[in-house]
Length: 348
Ligand code: TXA
Ligand code: MG
Image (cartoon, rainbow, N blue to C red):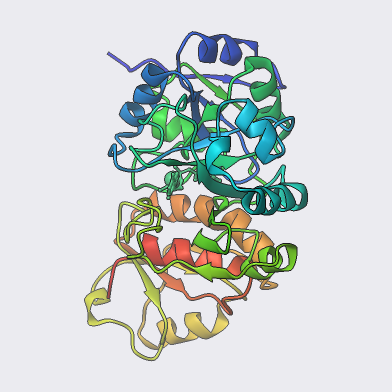
């Protein structure tokens, strides 16, 4: 028996997805970062379906997506998403400044959770991740459902995040009724995740919105949370976003690991035209099966957009492993690209 295939809803015809969400089902939703697997955030049984479809461990909390009307600490509290009694005036000021500067857009803020948000959503934590996506179809779904939508990336746990409706079909097509097709994701890597305290901001996951941009918006320090810090996202597991075959992130092309001997390889060129790396491989009589170029002009926006699709493509080839070049800098979006590539790769 062939498993049932999700129906792809194109051209903005989202009504069947809205009906499914209101009846407690989960669906594929486009956002500007990656596709999400969405369900009614106030419905514990819908949230359970999200964890089940992804095979996601229950200790890894979900982000709650909100419509553009909920653009302040006050409105999020009134909507029973945040617990206003645990938000001081100073903290509210920071939240509102960040919301004004970066929402709708790829920023998730971890904030004191209202009791009405099921503990399942936050894996028992007393804070909830809130994000206002800018993709028009995500906003249309949120408005027409009239409910906040909990949504992790729409991949099976630990796998590469999807940036097209087709990727969602490959990952979860046998487990969900609908995928709303919103085209290729504009940003390509997941949102920046921060925890907001009243005297500082912790960067938990790098994304398009960088530390400098955040720091320029508020007058408290922005610090990177160490991965073992209590505030670190449980989702910051070392291995994540990973292809099925080994991917090796090569820092020094003059010292290729011995493990590649006799293996067939694909090449992922993160920035530039890869001429240096191809030359090294040539001296070792290695001809890559497939080569993917993320941005020949070394533009991080372009590289981020193409990253996950390229990893998926190389993963589907018959080669044994992927060799990837490292990022040219760790500024801005390159930091997010480097973070995802490091988690996707096999330790040397
Ligand atoms: O761009 C995105 O953020 C996408 C789209 C679909 O919105 N979503 C996404 O969700 O990437 P997910 O579940 O794949 O990643 C969410 C990250 C995880 O690392 C999770 O551990 C962290 O955010 N997170 C969520 N809620 C948290 C909380 N209450 N405390 C700490 N970390 C949290
Ligand atoms: Mg994810």
